[in-house]
Image (cartoon, rainbow, N blue to C red):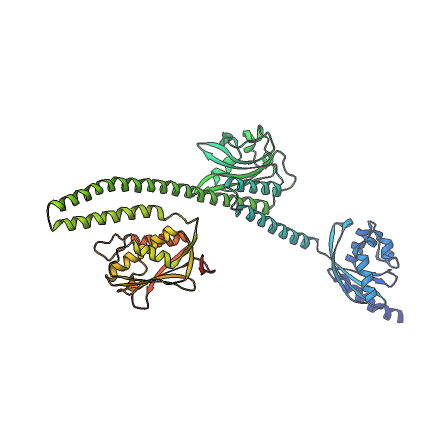
Length: 510
């Protein structure tokens, strides 16, 4: 009975350990097995490559049963736990089992209790997430590299895609007039070339274009028997395929796809398909931007030609009319000549505004340090200001296009004189975030401040409604925001700041 009482607690403890999800192994000070739960026995037997019962393992040294483990961190960590009598927790890979274990070793005076958990799946998931993050960073590095043109970026994406999907071929195609045009290609030398054209019906991409969604096939012959009848399979031997539609302006531009001449043993992962779709979407967005930029460039060129033509065709007869008016004034005095001269002046202003508006929308690329005060005084000299006064003593320099900055000041000064009267005072100064132009005229009603920069806005009977819209365009070309507020003297105050959360672009103290 005494024996039964002594054994019962151990049997109960063993029953508890058998219910533990981790593998458990008990070792004495001589590294001999004292106890193993069912999972512990399985782990030891798999590591040893031999089937044992728990009774057969008891009393044997772990390093004799699994000699390969003596050359691993398991050996070092177990010994360190016993030597220091401190718990050791670590994660280690055991090559013979191709398994990652999370290990907790608890030492005592009599031996070591070891809990092992197979964390291979979790480890692989974490590694896969890290790998995906690395790939996405690589993709971002390619698409954000401003030193590369569009084709070079697509080549970079195709290189990443073929590597990740394990294919030899990757292409960006364009569908035009029923033909499949290879635009950018990643392929073995001597195979497909950029610029080649084939009938869209001969390709697997026809399905992608028709359904406007990705096509995934590990084995074309087995997965899509109908596609196995086209030339893509019968002549070119394309056996596996992943392709995504490239959408531009809501229409299918072409396809972004990867393929190979060997079918796959396993399936393409969801990650591989998602990566293909993501890259295909970027290609579509980039193409859309490029097409938009090309259209804008064409429109700007047409506008420039139109403005120049209008300017030339109007200024010539206007010059003739002005000369004739001078001759007429020498021969006759008339109250009408002043009105004619005013009309000529207004036409000249309109012509200048047309030319400026045609050119001012271009982004500023080359800037220099321009003295805020000096630029203001130069602009003041070019505007009929009468008895108006300019106060511009700021010792601040701005990185700007000097000519456009002068145009900005000219339009603001002209606006101030037109609306503030001949004795208006205009002040130019800097703020902590930019600069301002203010006057002591009647100001602009709060209800109209959101519309003053709109093309055509003017409260003057003979105003063109162009001046302040030009101011907004010049500011935008520099990357500045423009707004109008009430000045300290109840007049109008125009403020300009960099369009970002950082310090204003180009404002420096002298």
